[in-house]
Length: 448
Ligand code: ADP
Image 1 (cartoon, helix red, strand yellow):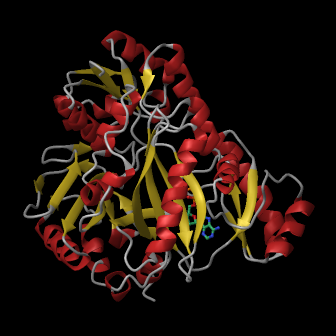
Image 2 (cartoon, protein in one colour; image 1 turned 180 degrees about the vertical axis):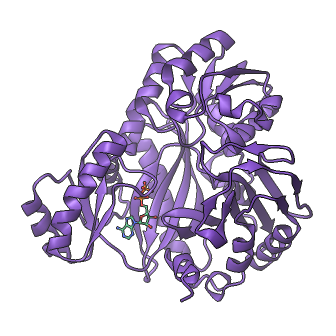
């Protein structure tokens, strides 16, 4: 096992990885930017190395500085967390060249699945259901137009290297498709340095489901069932749960097994998530594969008892997965709310600044993954998520009740957070009855 691991991330996920390292007897080392000098998680690291100014391109995205810090701290491995460099195959390659383990897939496996076009193709070959759409990147507008008339409007133009909902354009007719193709290509080239786009069928009403999978370096792969992340705003997940309420377990089992097959086919080690949209017939259509730990991994941990971050570290060190598929059993129901420092009453305006007081909830089945505490000043440079509140219970009704009570107990001020919004969303009939689709939060916010 590794002696020291460097965490190339910040905030709640840095703290989550610190906790996993400590359980495994590993010394965690953090890098931080000048804006994170007072980051509360840094206190729990064995060593912390400053890697530059607040803006991420000058610190958390600087491969050279992170590798230097890794050399100075003499670590065996680097955990990238999510965001920043987590899905950067070049970074994984540099780690390998420097003989530092990248805690995640090999650069080859990452490229095989992380590129949406390549990932779709491989997924199709192992029997995962994909959307009708283009098999290759589309350059020629005429080709896109003829494909769209074949599969039928609406269609969506998406970037092969896309992420965070960027580089996507919905087209309901030919004119919109021609325009969308060009603007998606430009946006993708600017945002990801790769302007390749493809076209697929657009589903008007869908739920977002995803399968958590884990693989090791010995050819083993397991799935940890699904999460439902239908509660989104502007493609950003707000509430996630496991298992997904009211779905067809046979269809789910089929895609979950195929998702594990996909890891084996890609020779993939580490954690991955295969994302799907589910239509009204409860059929799955694959969106993409995320080749990293997800923000919402705790709900899966609570219903399966598998520590995903520890498994990632173990398999990266060459150990086999500690579980087989037969060991994976679902127990109860878990729901997570993302606590963002945003004012839901003012168009989700980000709330940088001092947290003067904070009282965290507790009680049966409550888990909080957060670096936030009283006296912490939220820097303006990064994502607004300051933590996750997760409730686990024997069934969905109990999990909702526990989550509501925990949200009521959770006091953070004077900055505004998404807590009041979560309380309201958890009371909507759409959420309570799981009679929802990925646009229900937006409709609710619009007063519809
Ligand atoms: P990203 O990597 O940018 O998150 P995804 O492929 O995961 O891109 O898509 C993000 C979101 O965009 C999905 O959760 C869904 O809300 C919407 N979306 C993407 N593809 C489709 C589609 N074919 N039909 C309907 N909605 C889609």
